[in-house]
Image (tube, rainbow, N blue to C red; front, side, top):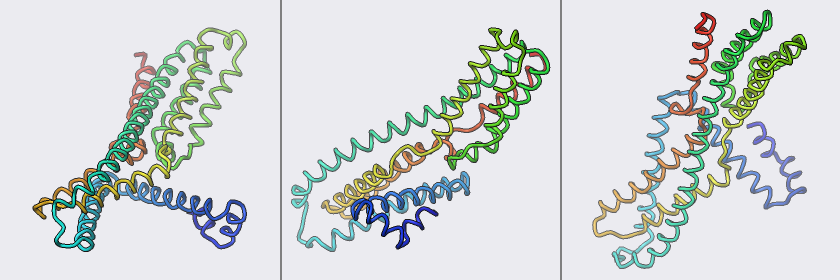
Length: 306
């Protein structure tokens, strides 16, 4: 929001105008507004928990219904009362073209968002699996390195499961988890040459590199991937489609209301699904830190010789 306020100021507007011109300045403002609205909605839902998610879903349905009724009201205000079902023939080509284009864009976005969501969940599972494997590999290490590495693995897992899971939603990493990885590299590097060059240590270092890569990928996955310009296209396409549906004519006005509202609600629900999938760690039904809790249980079992 600080960036938004700075660009909204007159001085910054003058600088941007001199650098890029009116058209580029308009694009920058649209992008900032889209990002600010998305962050506000995301933060509100996260603060309200599971109740917030259902309230957001109900709000989407309500807004879509109001938009559909508004489009129908506008259509009946503009079109003459004598306009009948024969009026639909002139609107059908527009409805078909916009429906096909928007359907292709919407389907592509849903598939991409779901693939990113699945990839984020698989990466979290891989990271937790790597932690359990590394903890078991410490059995082959001599003391005090074994005790130090086990303690650092617990510190890392606890930090990821708790503070970092919350901070990564804002695109921020946790210093405790980052420091734990660095300390593990230092412990391995300070070992005796005979121990550091052993196959077990080399395998552990390889696992540690995989862990660091999985962590970086998880933090990057927490950020939305769908650009604001694509969101603008989806929203504008949905509004156009609902508007044309409202301008269509049916023999029964009540049936027209039901049809128009159903189309609007369906499009709104699909957009809400895309919004949730694009934020895999923010949704109440998204990726959870359960794999890391399981890793801590495995750590306890290894400590007891199991």
